[in-house]
Image 1 (cartoon, rainbow, N blue to C red):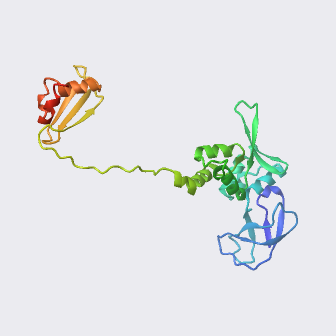
Image 2 (image 1 turned 180 degrees about the vertical axis):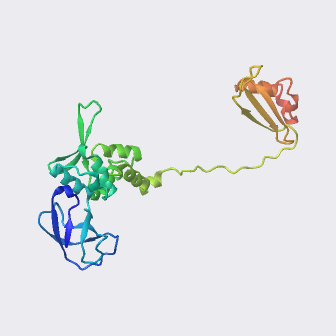
Image 3 (image 1 turned 90 degrees about the vertical axis):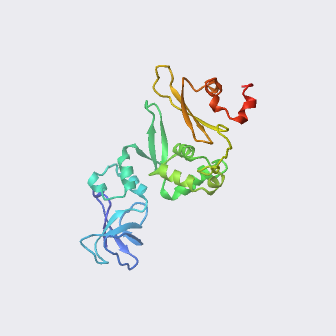
Length: 275
């Protein structure tokens, strides 16, 4: 069974012998075991899909992508080539993500790094391009361990960025932190319980008042910017009084002044001389 290499610019073609009998449905993907004849880079298993022109189970298969996308990037760096978009457009979003940043990726002792330079270009940091099978280990070490401290998304992401780099890193960190059982058990509920509203009964006019302040509003000719709204609990009578500010002294003068006798119910009469 003939299997073409993922990039036409690599000038290579491999022969793959399938070790098991499989029926490959049209427009589908599956992983099969096989033996390669000739050079192939780091791994024999590939993700393959039937060519649209040949739908038989023993037909021509075209390699769509390798199981670990970083392997493709490493091969590009070894070959010192950057494929054109036509050779990359059919690949996964993860491969395209690394392809667009290929100039900032370097190989050091066979390990793929992302080179992050400072704004002034005086120094740079190397971040390991983490393979998918190591993500859970790194997330667990940075977040769940004693030294991790079960920090939030922002701080956990900041710690990981110091050493690692991978596709959709922010989404993976956010998902890991939000699904952490220990964090969820210690975290306060999203909605704080509210006390139920109750009816307060009164027996006479102006025995109890509700006061609220509206504003700031455009300044009036008397230099007032607010409206103090007063409502009687018993009769529901409402008055709006203009005031210049919201100071406690100003509000008290309007409630207890000479022109506000109707605000005072019988229960307030013993307190009025003191006020």
